[in-house]
Image 1 (cartoon, one colour):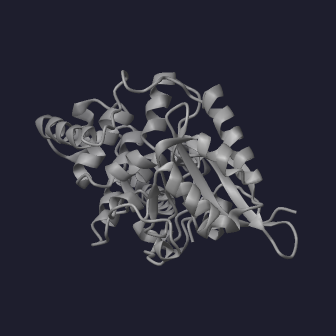
Image 2 (cartoon, rainbow, N blue to C red):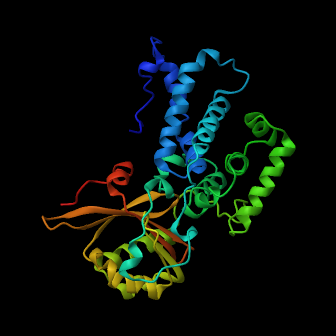
Image 3 (cartoon, one colour):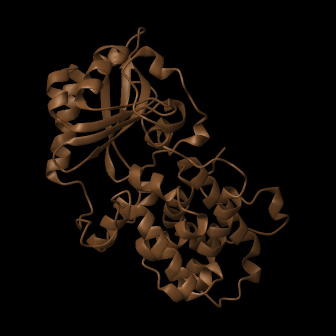
Length: 342
Protein backbone atom coordinates (compact mmCIF):
# COMPACT_ATOMS: atom_id res chain seq x y z
CA UNK A 1 0.00 0.00 0.00
CA UNK A 2 1.23 3.50 -0.81
CA UNK A 3 2.90 5.23 2.12
CA UNK A 4 2.30 8.93 2.55
CA UNK A 5 2.87 9.68 6.22
CA UNK A 6 6.65 9.81 6.02
CA UNK A 7 9.79 7.88 5.24
CA UNK A 8 9.71 4.36 6.64
CA UNK A 9 13.07 2.70 6.01
CA UNK A 10 11.94 -0.76 7.12
CA UNK A 11 14.17 -3.80 7.12
CA UNK A 12 15.95 -2.83 3.88
CA UNK A 13 17.72 -0.02 5.73
CA UNK A 14 19.50 -2.50 7.97
CA UNK A 15 20.66 -1.07 11.29
CA UNK A 16 21.07 2.52 10.02
CA UNK A 17 19.69 4.91 12.60
CA UNK A 18 16.97 7.39 11.65
CA UNK A 19 18.26 10.97 11.39
CA UNK A 20 15.33 13.31 12.20
CA UNK A 21 17.01 16.29 10.53
CA UNK A 22 17.64 14.35 7.31
CA UNK A 23 14.11 12.98 7.32
CA UNK A 24 12.73 16.52 7.67
CA UNK A 25 15.01 17.81 4.91
CA UNK A 26 13.84 15.08 2.53
CA UNK A 27 10.15 15.32 3.44
CA UNK A 28 9.98 19.04 2.63
CA UNK A 29 10.40 18.12 -1.05
CA UNK A 30 7.59 15.54 -1.09
CA UNK A 31 4.92 17.75 -2.64
CA UNK A 32 6.98 19.04 -5.57
CA UNK A 33 8.40 15.56 -6.21
CA UNK A 34 4.86 14.17 -6.24
CA UNK A 35 3.89 16.77 -8.83
CA UNK A 36 6.88 15.81 -10.98
CA UNK A 37 6.20 12.07 -10.72
CA UNK A 38 2.47 12.55 -11.35
CA UNK A 39 3.12 14.40 -14.59
CA UNK A 40 5.61 11.72 -15.61
CA UNK A 41 3.42 8.72 -14.73
CA UNK A 42 -0.17 9.94 -15.04
CA UNK A 43 -1.31 8.07 -11.92
CA UNK A 44 -1.79 9.52 -8.44
CA UNK A 45 -0.94 6.28 -6.68
CA UNK A 46 2.01 5.54 -8.97
CA UNK A 47 3.32 9.01 -8.16
CA UNK A 48 2.98 8.41 -4.42
CA UNK A 49 4.85 5.10 -4.78
CA UNK A 50 7.57 6.72 -6.90
CA UNK A 51 8.13 9.50 -4.36
CA UNK A 52 8.23 7.08 -1.47
CA UNK A 53 10.84 5.01 -3.34
CA UNK A 54 12.79 8.20 -4.14
CA UNK A 55 12.94 9.28 -0.51
CA UNK A 56 13.85 5.80 0.66
CA UNK A 57 16.71 5.60 -1.85
CA UNK A 58 17.90 9.04 -0.80
CA UNK A 59 17.70 8.12 2.88
CA UNK A 60 19.67 4.93 2.36
CA UNK A 61 22.36 6.48 0.16
CA UNK A 62 22.72 9.89 1.78
CA UNK A 63 26.18 9.00 3.09
CA UNK A 64 27.29 8.91 -0.58
CA UNK A 65 25.79 12.32 -1.39
CA UNK A 66 28.84 14.51 -1.95
CA UNK A 67 27.03 17.83 -2.25
CA UNK A 68 28.19 18.56 -5.81
CA UNK A 69 24.58 19.53 -6.52
CA UNK A 70 21.80 20.76 -4.27
CA UNK A 71 19.78 18.24 -2.28
CA UNK A 72 16.76 19.19 -4.42
CA UNK A 73 18.57 18.46 -7.69
CA UNK A 74 19.86 15.18 -6.30
CA UNK A 75 16.32 14.14 -5.32
CA UNK A 76 14.99 15.01 -8.77
CA UNK A 77 17.70 12.86 -10.34
CA UNK A 78 16.65 9.92 -8.17
CA UNK A 79 12.95 10.56 -8.87
CA UNK A 80 13.61 10.71 -12.61
CA UNK A 81 15.37 7.35 -12.50
CA UNK A 82 12.54 5.83 -10.46
CA UNK A 83 9.96 7.08 -12.97
CA UNK A 84 12.00 5.83 -15.93
CA UNK A 85 12.23 2.41 -14.26
CA UNK A 86 8.45 2.36 -13.81
CA UNK A 87 7.82 3.55 -17.37
CA UNK A 88 10.21 0.94 -18.71
CA UNK A 89 8.32 -1.99 -17.23
CA UNK A 90 6.58 -2.77 -20.55
CA UNK A 91 3.25 -1.38 -19.38
CA UNK A 92 0.79 0.38 -21.66
CA UNK A 93 0.58 4.15 -21.32
CA UNK A 94 -2.26 5.68 -19.39
CA UNK A 95 -5.15 7.01 -21.47
CA UNK A 96 -8.42 8.85 -21.39
CA UNK A 97 -11.44 7.26 -23.11
CA UNK A 98 -11.33 9.99 -25.77
CA UNK A 99 -7.94 8.65 -26.88
CA UNK A 100 -9.24 5.14 -27.55
CA UNK A 101 -11.77 5.66 -30.32
CA UNK A 102 -14.86 7.47 -31.51
CA UNK A 103 -17.59 8.78 -29.23
CA UNK A 104 -20.28 6.32 -28.13
CA UNK A 105 -24.02 6.36 -28.50
CA UNK A 106 -25.88 6.89 -25.20
CA UNK A 107 -27.04 3.27 -24.83
CA UNK A 108 -26.64 0.57 -22.16
CA UNK A 109 -24.12 -1.38 -24.22
CA UNK A 110 -21.73 1.57 -24.16
CA UNK A 111 -20.82 0.69 -20.55
CA UNK A 112 -19.77 -2.87 -21.41
CA UNK A 113 -16.12 -2.23 -22.32
CA UNK A 114 -13.90 -1.75 -19.30
CA UNK A 115 -10.12 -1.58 -18.96
CA UNK A 116 -7.90 -2.07 -15.88
CA UNK A 117 -7.35 0.84 -13.49
CA UNK A 118 -3.69 1.14 -14.49
CA UNK A 119 -4.69 2.11 -18.03
CA UNK A 120 -6.42 5.35 -17.03
CA UNK A 121 -5.18 8.81 -16.17
CA UNK A 122 -6.04 9.25 -12.49
CA UNK A 123 -7.14 12.43 -10.69
CA UNK A 124 -4.93 13.91 -8.00
CA UNK A 125 -5.71 16.37 -5.16
CA UNK A 126 -4.34 19.86 -5.76
CA UNK A 127 -2.67 19.94 -2.37
CA UNK A 128 -0.58 16.88 -3.26
CA UNK A 129 1.01 18.33 -6.40
CA UNK A 130 0.60 22.11 -6.63
CA UNK A 131 3.03 24.53 -4.97
CA UNK A 132 2.02 26.68 -2.05
CA UNK A 133 1.75 30.49 -2.23
CA UNK A 134 4.25 32.00 -4.65
CA UNK A 135 4.52 33.68 -8.00
CA UNK A 136 1.01 33.69 -9.58
CA UNK A 137 2.43 32.99 -13.06
CA UNK A 138 4.36 29.94 -11.86
CA UNK A 139 1.36 28.66 -9.93
CA UNK A 140 -0.87 29.12 -12.98
CA UNK A 141 1.53 27.09 -15.14
CA UNK A 142 1.61 24.38 -12.46
CA UNK A 143 -2.20 24.24 -12.45
CA UNK A 144 -2.41 24.01 -16.23
CA UNK A 145 0.19 21.24 -16.31
CA UNK A 146 -1.84 18.92 -14.05
CA UNK A 147 -5.15 19.31 -15.87
CA UNK A 148 -6.42 15.97 -17.16
CA UNK A 149 -6.03 16.86 -20.83
CA UNK A 150 -2.45 18.03 -20.32
CA UNK A 151 -1.42 15.01 -18.25
CA UNK A 152 -2.93 12.72 -20.89
CA UNK A 153 -0.99 14.53 -23.60
CA UNK A 154 2.23 14.17 -21.60
CA UNK A 155 1.78 10.40 -21.62
CA UNK A 156 2.03 10.39 -25.42
CA UNK A 157 5.55 11.85 -25.29
CA UNK A 158 8.67 9.70 -25.04
CA UNK A 159 9.91 9.63 -21.44
CA UNK A 160 12.89 11.92 -22.09
CA UNK A 161 10.76 14.56 -23.84
CA UNK A 162 8.25 14.33 -21.00
CA UNK A 163 10.96 14.94 -18.40
CA UNK A 164 12.51 17.81 -20.36
CA UNK A 165 9.16 19.55 -20.85
CA UNK A 166 8.23 19.32 -17.18
CA UNK A 167 11.64 20.43 -15.95
CA UNK A 168 12.00 23.30 -18.44
CA UNK A 169 8.43 24.55 -18.87
CA UNK A 170 6.80 23.78 -15.50
CA UNK A 171 9.69 23.93 -13.04
CA UNK A 172 11.59 26.54 -15.11
CA UNK A 173 14.98 24.84 -14.74
CA UNK A 174 17.84 26.19 -16.90
CA UNK A 175 18.77 24.03 -19.90
CA UNK A 176 22.23 23.29 -18.51
CA UNK A 177 20.80 22.07 -15.21
CA UNK A 178 18.33 19.82 -17.03
CA UNK A 179 21.15 18.48 -19.21
CA UNK A 180 23.21 17.69 -16.11
CA UNK A 181 20.24 16.03 -14.44
CA UNK A 182 19.46 13.83 -17.45
CA UNK A 183 23.14 13.27 -18.24
CA UNK A 184 22.86 14.67 -21.75
CA UNK A 185 23.80 17.84 -23.65
CA UNK A 186 22.12 21.23 -23.84
CA UNK A 187 21.45 20.84 -27.61
CA UNK A 188 19.79 17.50 -26.87
CA UNK A 189 17.61 19.12 -24.19
CA UNK A 190 16.61 21.97 -26.51
CA UNK A 191 15.79 19.54 -29.30
CA UNK A 192 13.65 17.37 -27.01
CA UNK A 193 11.82 20.46 -25.73
CA UNK A 194 11.09 21.66 -29.25
CA UNK A 195 9.65 18.28 -30.27
CA UNK A 196 7.56 18.07 -27.09
CA UNK A 197 6.17 21.56 -27.62
CA UNK A 198 5.22 20.69 -31.21
CA UNK A 199 3.36 17.56 -30.08
CA UNK A 200 1.37 19.48 -27.47
CA UNK A 201 0.66 22.33 -29.88
CA UNK A 202 -1.10 19.82 -32.14
CA UNK A 203 -3.57 19.38 -29.27
CA UNK A 204 -3.77 23.15 -28.69
CA UNK A 205 -2.00 22.80 -25.33
CA UNK A 206 0.54 25.45 -24.31
CA UNK A 207 2.35 26.54 -21.15
CA UNK A 208 3.68 29.91 -22.29
CA UNK A 209 2.71 32.96 -20.26
CA UNK A 210 0.62 34.38 -23.12
CA UNK A 211 -1.72 31.36 -23.02
CA UNK A 212 -1.96 30.89 -19.24
CA UNK A 213 -3.88 33.31 -17.02
CA UNK A 214 -1.78 34.05 -13.91
CA UNK A 215 -3.97 33.01 -10.98
CA UNK A 216 -3.50 30.75 -8.00
CA UNK A 217 -7.15 29.97 -7.20
CA UNK A 218 -10.34 29.37 -9.21
CA UNK A 219 -11.96 32.62 -10.32
CA UNK A 220 -15.27 33.77 -8.91
CA UNK A 221 -16.88 32.80 -12.22
CA UNK A 222 -15.46 29.27 -11.99
CA UNK A 223 -16.58 28.85 -8.39
CA UNK A 224 -20.05 30.10 -9.32
CA UNK A 225 -20.12 27.69 -12.27
CA UNK A 226 -19.38 24.73 -9.97
CA UNK A 227 -22.05 25.90 -7.52
CA UNK A 228 -24.67 26.14 -10.28
CA UNK A 229 -23.61 22.79 -11.76
CA UNK A 230 -23.87 20.97 -8.41
CA UNK A 231 -27.23 22.61 -7.69
CA UNK A 232 -28.65 21.48 -11.08
CA UNK A 233 -27.14 17.99 -10.72
CA UNK A 234 -28.47 17.43 -7.18
CA UNK A 235 -31.94 18.56 -8.31
CA UNK A 236 -31.42 16.44 -11.44
CA UNK A 237 -32.67 19.34 -13.54
CA UNK A 238 -31.27 18.35 -16.92
CA UNK A 239 -32.51 21.52 -18.58
CA UNK A 240 -30.56 23.69 -16.14
CA UNK A 241 -27.53 21.39 -16.24
CA UNK A 242 -27.47 21.28 -20.06
CA UNK A 243 -27.48 25.08 -20.13
CA UNK A 244 -24.16 24.99 -18.28
CA UNK A 245 -22.53 22.72 -20.86
CA UNK A 246 -20.81 23.86 -24.03
CA UNK A 247 -22.41 22.36 -27.14
CA UNK A 248 -19.40 20.13 -27.85
CA UNK A 249 -18.89 19.06 -24.21
CA UNK A 250 -17.69 15.52 -23.57
CA UNK A 251 -18.55 13.10 -20.78
CA UNK A 252 -16.53 10.03 -19.80
CA UNK A 253 -16.41 7.62 -16.89
CA UNK A 254 -13.17 5.66 -16.37
CA UNK A 255 -12.60 2.73 -16.23
CA UNK A 256 -15.34 2.42 -18.87
CA UNK A 257 -14.19 3.04 -22.42
CA UNK A 258 -17.45 4.85 -23.17
CA UNK A 259 -17.42 8.55 -23.84
CA UNK A 260 -20.12 10.86 -25.13
CA UNK A 261 -19.95 14.16 -26.98
CA UNK A 262 -22.57 16.86 -27.30
CA UNK A 263 -25.19 18.22 -24.93
CA UNK A 264 -27.99 16.16 -26.51
CA UNK A 265 -26.20 12.83 -26.03
CA UNK A 266 -25.12 13.69 -22.50
CA UNK A 267 -28.67 14.66 -21.53
CA UNK A 268 -30.09 11.50 -23.13
CA UNK A 269 -27.63 9.32 -21.22
CA UNK A 270 -28.29 11.09 -17.92
CA UNK A 271 -32.04 10.57 -18.28
CA UNK A 272 -31.59 6.96 -19.40
CA UNK A 273 -28.68 4.76 -18.37
CA UNK A 274 -27.39 7.32 -15.90
CA UNK A 275 -30.70 8.01 -14.17
CA UNK A 276 -29.45 6.14 -11.10
CA UNK A 277 -27.61 9.38 -10.30
CA UNK A 278 -30.93 11.04 -9.47
CA UNK A 279 -31.00 12.14 -5.85
CA UNK A 280 -27.20 12.28 -5.53
CA UNK A 281 -25.32 14.58 -3.19
CA UNK A 282 -22.00 16.25 -4.06
CA UNK A 283 -19.06 17.41 -1.94
CA UNK A 284 -16.69 19.89 -3.66
CA UNK A 285 -12.96 19.12 -3.72
CA UNK A 286 -9.88 20.42 -5.54
CA UNK A 287 -8.45 18.13 -8.22
CA UNK A 288 -6.07 18.62 -11.13
CA UNK A 289 -6.29 22.41 -10.95
CA UNK A 290 -9.95 22.02 -11.93
CA UNK A 291 -13.47 22.11 -10.52
CA UNK A 292 -14.31 18.77 -8.89
CA UNK A 293 -16.58 17.01 -6.43
CA UNK A 294 -17.21 13.65 -4.81
CA UNK A 295 -20.57 12.18 -5.87
CA UNK A 296 -22.69 10.12 -3.48
CA UNK A 297 -25.71 8.13 -4.61
CA UNK A 298 -28.77 7.43 -2.42
CA UNK A 299 -28.20 4.47 -0.09
CA UNK A 300 -31.25 2.16 0.30
CA UNK A 301 -30.28 1.78 3.96
CA UNK A 302 -30.24 5.54 4.48
CA UNK A 303 -27.98 8.43 3.58
CA UNK A 304 -25.72 8.36 0.53
CA UNK A 305 -22.85 6.06 -0.48
CA UNK A 306 -19.67 7.01 -2.44
CA UNK A 307 -20.08 6.58 -6.16
CA UNK A 308 -17.52 8.59 -8.15
CA UNK A 309 -15.03 11.45 -8.19
CA UNK A 310 -16.01 13.97 -10.87
CA UNK A 311 -13.57 16.44 -12.44
CA UNK A 312 -15.05 19.24 -14.55
CA UNK A 313 -13.14 21.00 -17.31
CA UNK A 314 -14.34 24.45 -18.30
CA UNK A 315 -13.55 27.35 -20.58
CA UNK A 316 -14.23 29.97 -17.92
CA UNK A 317 -17.90 30.23 -18.80
CA UNK A 318 -19.23 26.73 -19.45
CA UNK A 319 -18.34 23.13 -18.66
CA UNK A 320 -16.47 21.50 -21.54
CA UNK A 321 -15.82 18.10 -20.02
CA UNK A 322 -17.17 15.80 -17.28
CA UNK A 323 -14.92 12.97 -16.11
CA UNK A 324 -16.30 10.76 -13.35
CA UNK A 325 -13.81 8.26 -11.97
CA UNK A 326 -15.57 5.11 -10.80
CA UNK A 327 -13.23 3.93 -8.07
CA UNK A 328 -14.45 5.63 -4.87
CA UNK A 329 -12.89 3.02 -2.59
CA UNK A 330 -9.45 4.18 -3.75
CA UNK A 331 -10.03 7.84 -4.53
CA UNK A 332 -12.28 9.09 -1.73
CA UNK A 333 -9.68 8.46 1.03
CA UNK A 334 -7.05 10.15 -1.16
CA UNK A 335 -9.22 13.28 -1.36
CA UNK A 336 -10.25 13.18 2.30
CA UNK A 337 -13.88 12.48 1.42
CA UNK A 338 -16.11 10.69 3.96
CA UNK A 339 -17.03 7.05 3.38
CA UNK A 340 -20.75 7.76 3.77
CA UNK A 341 -23.11 10.74 4.06
CA UNK A 342 -25.81 10.53 6.72
